[in-house]
Structure formats: structure tokens, C-alpha cells
Length: 264
Image 1 (cartoon, rainbow, N blue to C red):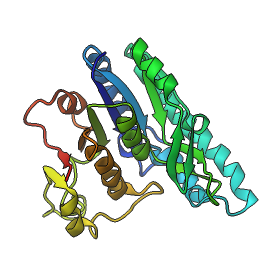
Image 2: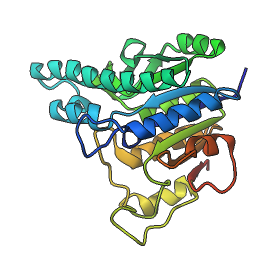
Image 3: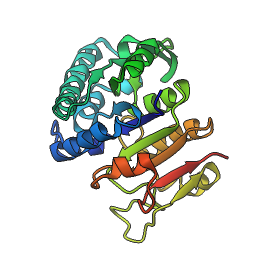
């Protein structure tokens, strides 16, 4: 079987986060083309974030906080509607490039406890991969066995969990910046890229990596990434809006700037 790579397509990659319900179509097309070429040598699972689709509605209904009052329940439907829209846009792009992708809905095959995945029926994913299919998995709502009763399971958590569970050799977190910086590169011109990041280095960075959207922003992405890195998965965070970035990170070609998470 071909080596497995799990790719998290961040919301900032597949949507325009400052424009509600707007896809980043050129980047989606660019990524789909690379996926079609990578399938010759790799098995792939694609996980995508919500960006300007899911996060807008999830925030409005406070879904990540769990069950607070009955009026939230319609919010679950509206989150699903918007995330399904985005999944279908990505699926159509992949299909146009000959990628045999199949959407997988996490709410139907996993449960959480206090916001963390506690069980995940992954056998369908294994069967898809054995056929050469590409599972396409969105961040999703999820049922929760704690007092929360429901929650949001982020694409970042899904990607790291599956990387460990399915024995991926590489996990790529795709964002719209080149990796992890010493500060916010959009606000601090002096911020520099960190090529290799260990957990001990995180202590000095915690203040500058403020939690962002409903799934925790870059800080949560790094924490999820360390979970996989510490179990032997090679984890990279890089800018998928750059031409050929996904191919370069997966194939390991030199000269591409990104951040590698180091265990220990």
C-alpha cells in the first residue's frame, strides 16, 4: 500500500475568511491539481476546516460550548448546511481533476467526550484507502457524552487523531502563512519563521499565539500537531496558497519554507 499522508486544508486556505460564505476558488483548484498528481505515489486523506462557512454560524449559536438552551439546536442544522456547501465545492473541484474523493461525515461515525474524540469507527476509511479513494472530511459538529451533549470537532483534531490511528507517515497542516512565526506576521513585520518547533519552545510563544476562531486558531493547530509528532508522525505546517506547496511538502523537496514540529 502507498504511504499515507493526511492533509488538513485550513479554513484560511479553502475560504476567504474575511468574506462570509466565500470560497477561495483559485487555491482550491490549485490544491486539487496537486492532489491528482500526488495520488500516483501516495494515499491521501483530506480534512478541511470551516473558514468563513462553518465558523460564522458556529460562533453565532455557540455550538462549541455545548448545549445551553433549545434555540441552539437549529444552529447545528445551519452549521451542517454551510459545511456541506463547502465540502461540495471542494469535492467538485477534486472530481474535475480526476480525484476519486468521497465525503465522510464525522458526526455519523465518531463521538466525543468534553470536546475530545473518544471513539471513531475508521473501518470505512481503511476500505476507501485500500481502493485508492480519497476520503474528504470536514470539521463537524459531534455528539458528546459529557454534559456538553454536543460540540465542534475541529479539522485539526480530526487530522492528528487519524494520522496516529491510521499510521500516516506525514501530516500536513495547510494555512495561508508560511508556518509558525515568533509573532503574528500580519501585524509584526519583525516576526520570523520558526523552521523547527519543539514543545519546550512553545512556552515563550504562548502569549503571541492567541486562540483565534471557534476551533482555537494556530495555537490549537500546534497542540494537535504535537500529539501526532510525539507518536512518530512527521508534522509540517506551511502555506498552501503558494504554488506547488502541497507537492513540495509531501515529497520533501528542499527549499520550501515551513515549520516542522519536533517531538520531545
